[in-house]
Length: 115
Length: 208
Image (cartoon, rainbow over all chains, first blue to last red; front, side):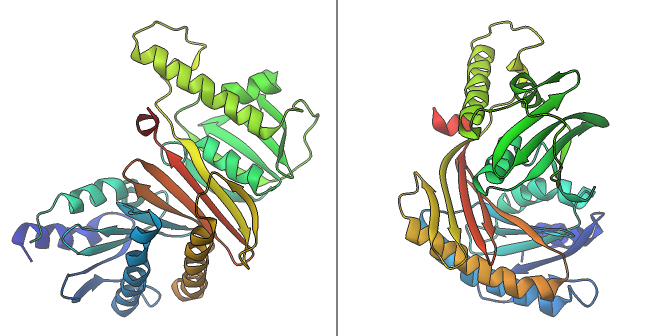
């Protein structure tokens, strides 16, 4: 993991309203920053793996999202697949700085050279 | 009155929400705010029956509400409107609004000066290019320009199954929608156990 990316990822939990975040690397290794029982590190990892399984067949249906957002009542889940086969997950509280920054953070992630 | 949903006009377009409410044959009231209430749209079983914006009501009010580009809106439980002022179909009304926006955007791009009353300042918006509504079991109720409805139903069912697992696990409340940011637009999915909705919207730039 490159130093710039490492510090960028480490700063994500500091964004006000950010509930959790995580990343899956191309080798399948996962790094998660959860919070509390409902969004523990283990749960975040599980969530990302489930989503990764679901995301792969999307290309076959003519849909290749740059990112996708699951809008729940109390949390927005943003999944961002990187062209270098990394997957980012952000969990933001609605109506907070974190949810307003989701697009910006997704663009920053996509702009990172990760190879 | 219970607030069922809230959205920022920068993130979700008003036509998308009205479209989904009408196609889903829902009954609701959409209220628009900019610090204070600007107006309301009443939808009764998928039909737009009344709109009010300040002093005006009816179709003019409906159109005026679509010229608002900043603020928020709330989706409220349906209540009977004080009167019925709109009798045209929602397809006609939305089509007209989208046409006006497209014309305003064209005028704006060609440098024409427009009056403040016209919706020339509206940013380019999306237009629906595909829509599908099905029962949770997969029976298609409505298909508009969807080339592979069976594929869409399978996709929605997969997402619905995952959502069913996620909802009790995450404790984040009800799932309102899933949005895909595509290269040339967006797709909005409502994968519920009893109803599957898929709407794809192209950005204005992608349509030209």
